[in-house]
Amino acid sequence: MNNQPLHSLHGPGASLTELDERAREIFRRIVETYLETGEPVGSRTISRAGVHLSPASIRNTMQDLAELGLLDAPHVSAGRRPTHAGLRLFVDGLLEVGDVAEEDRQNIEARLCARGRSFDQALDEASAILSGLAGGAGVVVTPARDAGVKHVEFVALGPDQSLAVMVFEDGTVENRLMERPVGVTPSALQEASNFLNHLLRGKTLADVRADVAAELGKARSELDATAARLIEDGLAAWSGGEGSQRALIVRGRANLLGDPNTAADLERVRMLFDDLEQKEQLIGLLDGVRDAEGVRIFIGAESRLFSLSGSALIAAPYMSGQRRVLGAIGVIGPARLNYARVIPLVDYTARVLGRLTNG
Image 1 (cartoon, rainbow, N blue to C red):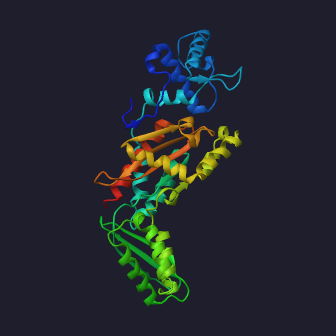
Image 2: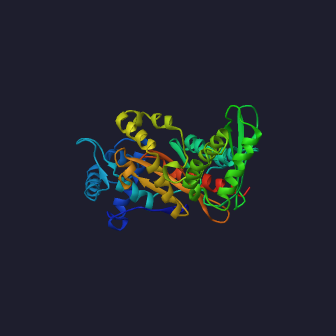
């Protein structure tokens, strides 16, 4: 049975204690078949799958499960499929989750831990990995920066590029390549560095964001124009914003159209793409994962973000060696995601990202 930490959002509704052994077995078979095929499941399919009951007896049990809100039928003559409440009950109580395959482990380790790869590049790669391995859209929220700033430096790299370097009091360093304003001088670079070092020292980026705008307004007449531009661009380039200012990495949207069962419902897929565009809501949902150490699962109407499209999100926090949560990583897809495969992949990728923060 489950050997991954799952944190349920299961609300009021049917529980496994309400199902006898026959109902549990039939329910489990229906959900597993539906997750595999994406098609409603009929009583004869369940009978042929090894449940030693007549189709009529199976139909009666399916009707009982429907009355409990665990199954529904898309058409009068069709078979049954799990509701979102049914999927939640299955995930919480009946899903068997194993370990990540060794081949997948090696793939994740090799791609995230490649020599010379920055943590920002690793975050982008993690999103791409989950997209490829899990068959959905991989999503990552960048860390919320809450450490104070120790030092800021702008370094010229060439005629059209500068490197912005920010050293935080927790020992981490962030580097960002920036477009270098035309005609910028070494003195302007130094002036921008001095201005920020005076204003930011010991404060967090969140604390100082408004202060910088106000100070720039006062000092703009005294600052070199290119120095002011560097300061504004430098602050915009660094991570650590709040809400919609946080960076959200999404990879693999095309995967959501790769399944013929998904592609057949273009309106639902269109709504799912709209979900992915609601950056602030999605970041807020992923930030909610920070409260739990294990994998969190959001299915359909459990989240306002996915209530229309019927999508699902499987996400886990990644944290530092000091157990401080930095951000979250996950997979978005149709509600019939392969939970048994995706859950351990998300969990393992999050743990590898956490190790990288201490490297």
